[in-house]
Structures are given as C-alpha cells and as structure tokens.
Length: 401
Image (cartoon, rainbow, N blue to C red; front, side, top):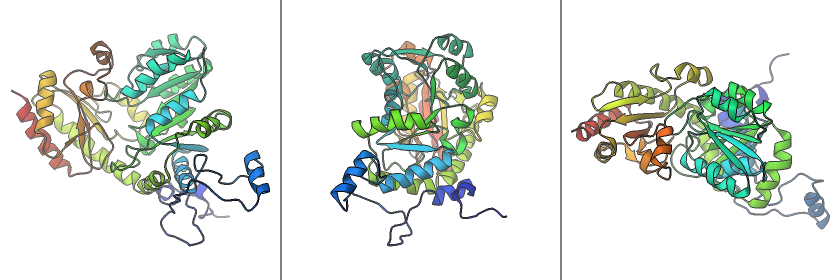
C-alpha cells in the first residue's frame, strides 16, 4: 500500500501551510471562506436544546466557535504538531488565558525573568492580585530553576528566545523540573515561530503565540493562539474560560491569518537570511559594542539555540555606544527602517526597549534582563539585505560622535 496523498496527516509542512484545515462551502470557493456571522440558526427548538446540552457538536455562537476560526486553528495545529489550537483576540489574551484558565488563589507560578513587558506585568502584578504567588528566575541558570521548582508549582512560563535580549532557555531541562514540581510548562514561541522551533517536542505542555507577529507578517491584524496536546486542559480549563470571558478572535482577523500561514515558511526563511546578514554586518562596526543573534557563534548560548531552533530567527539586538542619546540619534537617522514596537513584519522595524516595550520596569530590573540604555531591537524584514545594511550604516554614522 502506498501513502495516501490525500490524508492531511501525511502532508509535508509546506502543503499543510497552504491547505491545512480548509473547508469549502457548497459554493466551492478557492480561497478560504470568511464567515462574518455572530450566530447560527437551528432547524428546531429540539436541535437548539440538544446543541446547548452538548449532545450535538455544531456551531452555536461565534464567541464559542466560527468556521473561519476553525480553519485557522486546524492549520496552525497541523503546523505545530498539536492536537488542539484555540485562537484569541491578541497575543496577550493568549498569555492571560493560558495562565488564568488553570490558576486559582494559593497557586504558584515560576517564570523566567526575561519576558516581554506585558507578560512581566501579568506574572508580577496581575496574578498576585488573585492570591497567586509568582517567582522570577534567571532563565539561563538551571540552578535557579531547580531551587524555584523545589516547591509544588502550578505553572511555569518562559519565552525563548527572550524579548529583547534573545536569551535561550533549555526547554528539555526546565520541562523535566517543571513536571517534577507538578507544573504545566507554557512556552511563548513568538520569536522562533513554529517554522523554526516546536516546543511541544522539547517537553512543553502549552505553546502560545502572538499571531500579530510573523504569522500575519504584514502588520494588518491582531491575534493570538494557544496550542497543546492536553485534552483535559482544553476541556476543563481553557474552553470554559474562553466561552465565558470572551477573548475571541474576530473572523476577519482569522481569515487574514489563514492567508498569512500560506507564506509563513517562505517569509521566515528570508527573514532569517536577512537577519544573519545584518548581524554579521553589525559585528565589529564602529559604535556597536555588542551584537546579539542566536545564529552567530558569538551568542553565549549558540549551541543550545541551534539544538532547539532550525535557524537564528528574524530579530537582531545590539548595543550602541553612548547609551540612550546615541540610540535615539541612531533611530532618528534611519531612513528605510521604521521605528515601531511591532516585529515579524515584512518591513524592517526597530525600537528602543528601555523606553518602549520595557519602560515600566525599573532600571535595575531592566539591567537584570540585559536591557541597557543603548540596546536596540531590530526586527529584520524582507527588503534587500544590502539596503537594510546601508541604512544601518548611515544611521550609525549619525549616531556616533
């Protein structure tokens, strides 16, 4: 017997990205259908009753499920290698839902210190309001993980590579420690994307994304996603939380994201090529005191990064001599690259983390995360790499005095 080429389970990644989850209506449309509807009709009152009792599985209300969302969720789940995918209105909605849906007063959360600013806020300020203990550790220090996870813990949260200093965390080692402590490991995989890294294969229980970033890839829509193989988490924790609190992805945004997945692998490949070229170009440039890129051998965790990721990613962070003033001169001198706190876009975007994404943190806390006043985060886009390098060069020349 040969392989069944019509079985989605046998499809290779590029095919899944183009065709995964597609459900055509009776009209036989080529492009996936956009179902802009809030509700659905029943043939009888009895059918409605059975639907609400859970005896019939069907679309009832778009806060619960929608055909366009289902196509997006199925396609992303196939790419991730996960049984379940639940989409959300934004990446931060995914973070909060993944945590809050399974936490209660008296529970304990351990997280890596190097987090996106809003994730840091949820862990250190929002969850404690509900009587949940939160502990931060240096994500690269396994001894700190061991100490923190020597006590019973409900959730472990980390991002790798981290935002913005691109720290790499050993997911296999942390997952073992988390599971011994009775914890569920949640990994924010935004920087790596499912094309470069699949945390479930390294022991993660839950993976989440801001689909606003690379999955959309062109700065159009907000979205988020939570993926897992844990049936109980989906049925008993996440599904009730989503249905009754309502952080639902819009059907239009889901449709845009479905189309974004079609080109994700191609775009991420080009992002990585450009980012590596830019990182190599910046290394040793006058006025640049440090270049941070997982794909460079100079990265302190290069070997670990390459054992977990298939390439270095689209983000390059670097420090400019002269602190904030020099960094601002650099940003203001850019002509091609845009100043924006978004990332994963077709356009190259840059930001100054200390005064934007992580400005709420104290200077001491920022330094613990490797965020100096001279640090710049660059999301390398799909332009010609030489044009990006030329723009960086002229901006550096204007910044260094």
